[in-house]
Length: 64
Image (cartoon, rainbow, N blue to C red; front, top):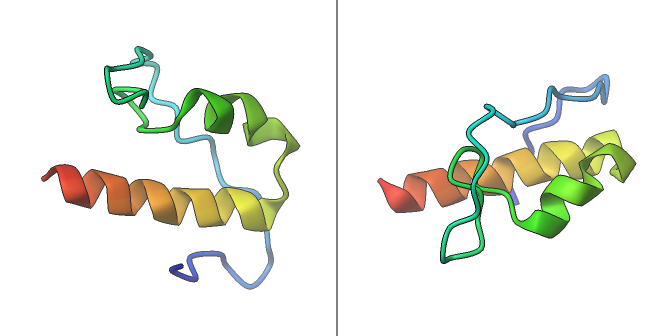
């Protein structure tokens, strides 16, 4: 996994861009998170949030 977290472990902003619709692939068309990832965002540690952002970057790159 890509080490995207800054040294301070501050929390990132939510990846939500208010284009919320789950597609046939079960990913949000706006942020590319699954329903479970969306629901669990606030309960994640800063590290988990940064790790998920790295995964979302990989998902976005795979779509291009």
